[in-house]
Amino acid sequence: MNAHLAASRRRERLRRLPLATVGILVLLFLALPIIVVVPMSFSSAESLRFPPPGLSLRWYEAFFSDPLWLEAALNSLIIGVSSSTLALGLGTLAAYGIVRGTFRGRGALETNFISPMILPPVIIAVALYIFYARIGILGNYLALIAAHVVIAAPYVVLLMTLAIRSFDVRVEQVALTLGASRWQMMTRILMPNLLPNAAAAWLFAFVISFDEVVVTLFVSGTHLTIPKRMFNQLVLQINPTITAIATILIGFSLVAVALAAWLNRGSGFVPKAEGEGH
Amino acid sequence: MTNQTQTSRTASGRYPAGAARAVRPAARRQPSGFVWVLPLLLLVGFVFNLPLLMTAASSLLDQKTGAVTVANFQEVAASKVYLPVVWRTIRIALVVSFACALIGYPLAYWMTGLSRRGQTVALAIIVTSFWVSILVRTYAWIVVLGNSGIVNRFLMSTGLTEKPVEFLYNELGVAIGMINVLLPFMLLPLFAAMLQVDPRLRQIAYTMGASSFQFFWRVFFPLTLPALGATFILISILSLGFYITPAILGGGKVPLIANMLDILINQFPRWNLAAAISLVLLVLTVGLFVAYQRLRRVE
Image 1: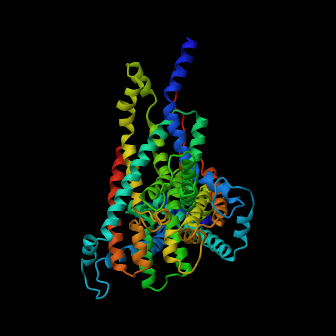
Image 2: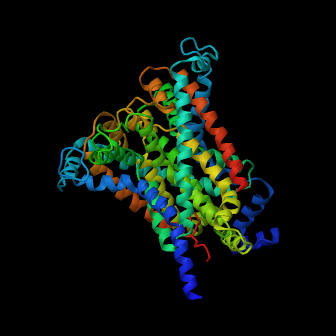
Image 3: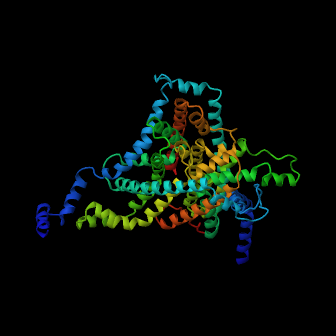
């Protein structure tokens, strides 16, 4: 019986071999950009050769000694932190209103808040360009931040509505019954409980803002951000400094997203893998 | 304080605390909570809804005279410049969606049969790729597919070709880059949908004499077809608005709708025409999104 089982398992494995080959090749295709860019950032060569002929940190030095890259990095940080913080504040309040409110049209409102995530960014970029130009705030720093808030807020609204929905409403009711004001209940009961979710939402919003290219290209005027400068350089010429920035960005977004996923674990946002019961 | 609480208790009877009395009945009797959404609504209204409405309005205006006209749409429909770009965008969106389905479905299916650890590794690769900046992922293809890139040096060293194959700055390069960026959007929902298929169905099918081939084509595939359709539409939606990949891997030779919009806004100031084209894109996107929601409900 056992021998028979082992044999059939071997047959099964052999039958799955073509499928496994395809699967591994497709995974390789997905990972290829990362596999290529990271080693090249440590290359000593002037040209983009893979594998790199020698190792050096010259492209990291080139990045950190270029005032324009540093200016872009500073702008990206300022815009990312301010817009994700604003998105978290406004988005959490809105999520609370959508989940616990009783007014009509909450579903439509939720769709409205989430739609900047669904529409192609270029549509938002064109609309904001025309609008900002007409009212004379094209290239304004605060207007750029406002655009980033609108783009990052959908992620906060999505995550926080999920989190608030899974928070037991009776805990809130008990607090209110015991004499807390709604604001006290929010700040002293709800927020401490949802702090991990809020932190995750903030990180997602930050990564979204930090990576945003298209809308920024249209409405930022003369302000540089890291993705904007990367894009401009990529269109013009190939400069290996970009591999260093790319590697920093890869590490940075991975840490941020891993942290966010860990903070938000158990709330159903990260797809859970369940084995097929054999 | 004690006095007040007692008064309120006698007044309302059911609510022990004054503050709660003020909040709870109001929440029951009339709609409440609107004030919480108001700040975001003001911002989104001003920086998203209003600009979109203005774009829609200006697509119906003549740029010089300001008169109401459909000339902008007529120009798009009749043009030898704009219309081919619209068709190319739709064609590439279809090719990319088909390719993603063709390579994404087998990978997702293979993943369902892996051990838990294998699934975690595969998911980690997919999610990593998903979160790495699109600029980085696009950039890498210049190195891989360029004339002196990895693929061409390999092809020439094996003697398969004499001259380097032109992968970049044409539709093929743009499509490869887009497939790489969009594949995770197909894999994650598709894999999730495949895990929903009851594993006992396989045992039942085998017990009743079906081969694994029959089980796949007559049970598993039909059950996951709505999810495949939904993700196909999702990829099409995302493809239609692509800007970065065609700009970098197309080298200006393969403009899609988004790149054309960039030119009409930033190079020739033809805002009203750009508004008309972005409205066409908006209608296409929203139409596809409605279809996507329908299919999700079937799922």
